[in-house]
Length: 62
Image 1 (cartoon, rainbow, N blue to C red):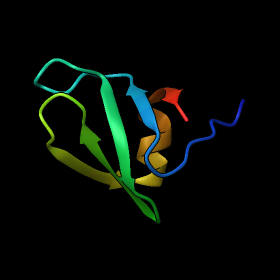
Image 2 (image 1 turned 90 degrees about the horizontal axis):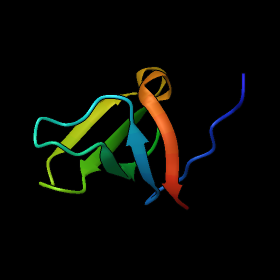
Image 3 (image 1 turned 120 degrees about the horizontal axis):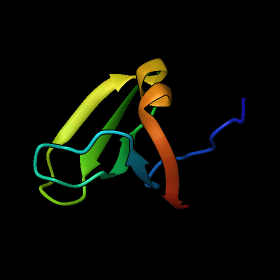
């Protein structure tokens, strides 16, 4: 399994889109939980790192 590298303020593409229609999110907070912000509507989502790793498709901007 390849390790996906991401850091604070990276733009990432998730597997499932946000209800507003975009798959792109910015990482806002990292720790045991990861907080991401939708790049289209600025809503935030907080999820455990394990779920984030499962739902991450690719890192777009470093």
